[in-house]
Image 1 (tube, rainbow, N blue to C red):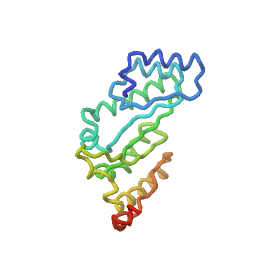
Image 2: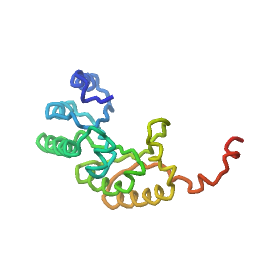
Image 3: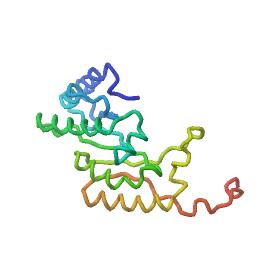
Image 4: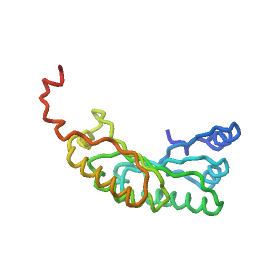
Length: 186
């Protein structure tokens, strides 16, 4: 699921350009981004590159995205900016996706500012999918809708202040836990 680890990625990018695929892109954690791949992305004029980042600090990012390293992520953003500047290319446009959890939501306004400083133009925020048995069920913001909604409002204000385009989930009804379980079965 990590495209940068695919040996045939350069060929796939060449084929997209050769066959004039109008909108091709991929999402990556950017840990394996190299100058060679970045130059290929620019050479084929890939319109969009999405970076996944689930923390606004080194500590949270490395805890959530083990074994990813924050310094490597920051270096990847620098590589993208340097390569685009050196080649004079507006492509790829940068976007970021972040999974919202109790452990990281308070960092999201700071991540929005950091991402904007690193050249990200669009951010997509999604709630963590709850899958039982992983031991992280307490991370869902369904457990704390008030915190979630307060932070979504702050994130929206931050995004507007720094000129970041965002796609955010809807607020969670703060009465979500007020309904008796019996009513849910009806």
